[in-house]
Every structure is written in C-alpha cells, then in structure tokens.
Image 1 (cartoon, helix red, strand yellow):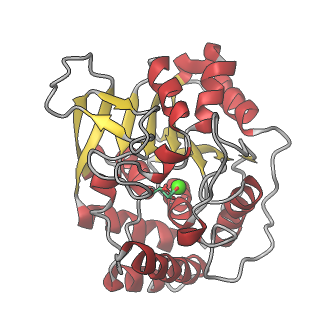
Image 2 (image 1 turned 180 degrees about the vertical axis):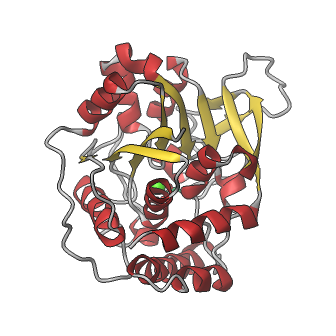
Image 3 (image 1 turned 45 degrees about the vertical axis):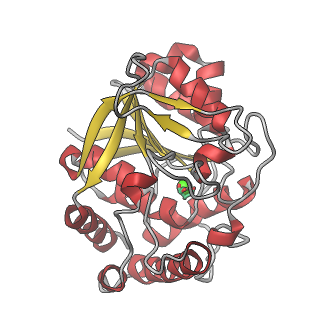
Length: 310
Ligand code: RIB
Ligand code: CA
C-alpha cells in the first residue's frame, strides 16, 4: 500500500525533483504540496511548486502557500545558487495547476485530520511551516508518522562553516520540531553530497525524451553551473529527493539512531546541527540520521520518475 506523504518545500531546483519523484513513484501517495520561503521568497517558491507540477503533468495534488519569513530572523534567499526567481535556467511556463485557497498550515492540518493513517511529512526547505503546525495544531501531531527533513549536516555547513542552508535559515523551527517529540529523520549534507549530478546523470535525465526530462536537464545545468561558481562543485548535489527515495526504499540509505541538537546562540555556529554520533553527551536519542547513499539505486529512482512523467 502506498505511503501517504505531504511535501513541504522551497523550490528550488532539487525540490522540483523531490516533487517529481514523489508524484511518479507508485510507493508514494502524494496528498499535498506546501511551499515555504527559503531558496526564494514565498511568491517564487509557491509559483515554482505549481510550475513543477505543470511541466510534469501532475494534477489533483493540492498546493498551498506557506510562511514568508522564518520564525525568528529575516529571510535571506539562496539566490546565488537558485537564481532570483528560485528556479533559474529554463524559461518558466505559466502554471496550469491552481493554488489551494487554504494556507500551508491549514492544508497540512486538514490532510492529517482526514487521513485514515499516519502521514509522512517530507520537508525539503526550512522547517518553518512544520513548526507552525506543531505550535497551532498539536491535536494532529499523532497523525504524523515522521518528519523526513533535508537539512543540517553531521559535519560542515554550506552557508557558514557549520550551518547548512535550511537549518541556517530557520534554526528555531528545528528546535520546535525536535521538542514536539514527532519522529524525526535528518538527511544532511553529509549524505546529499554523495548524490552528485555528473554529466552522465544529466544525460540520463535528458534521455527521457519528454518535457519533464528536457526541463529537468535545464534545471540541472543551471544548478551545476552555480554550484561550480560558488561552491567549487561542477557536479552539484541533488539534496532534496533523497528524502523521498528513503520513503520509497529505506535500503537506499543507511541510518543511525542518535542525538541531535541545533545551535541557536553561537556567533559563528548559529544553525549548526550538532549530531552526537559518538553519544558523548549521553542525552536521549531524538533523531534518525542518514549516513550513506546507494548512489546508483538513487539515480535509478530519479530516472524512472522522470520517464514516468509528461
Ligand atoms: O542546503 C541544501 C538545501 O537548501 C536544499 O534543500 C536546497 O533546496 C536548499 O533549500
Ligand atoms: Ca530545498
């Protein structure tokens, strides 16, 4: 039986592939897509979620607009990687997929309430919306099977020495979600940097021969060019879809049950995800952390999804 899933995202090039993988793979029952400010301002990430579905022919999945600002600081979009519209590269079509009249928190609450079984919440941007659900609707938390979040790192960051972008953008939201007691999986840079978009991968996406493949190829070309310019990585990492792949096939990544905390105060370390892999703190374990990726299995899932869409 397919796993019910909500995707909360900030499209964003890699977020688009997470949406496509969730919509195309038969192991997933994609119940809703919600946008959050992160890679871009909320008007861009919301529009881009609708465009991602329009290009791929994904219909019938409600899309709702989420938080425009993090819980406790001003938004600083990742325009250097994703572009001014958060989806640089291809010419963007007018969306044909409508925007739900509810906001993200209302849609998430309704999907959880109406679901006949617990729902996996996949978050591929800052955790702002999920934190709002925890704070405003504690009555629905029992219907969250787990939160699977692309963010953080067991090691170094990508926007400061120790903070990854999604964590850096809204560290308070991580603390709210961790404190809620909802089962939590962190998919950090330590594993996402194993999902490198090589020229061979880009060719496999384009070889799908459909609109999704050609649009996706242009997205990957842009994403790799900016990663090369700003991070010295010509084969950029496709971070976000790993979360979806782990729901589809748990064997695609190894994981460890461990302790993680988020730094909220450090002058140099605010937003760092402090993952105690050696259990030095002896604190209660509170997270499942992804470690190693079955790279070919991952790319095969991506390739199959692109081929299955329009
Ligand atoms: O640091 C990588 C993460 O930040 C990814 O989710 C990417 O889309 C950006 O949101
Ligand atoms: Ca993202």
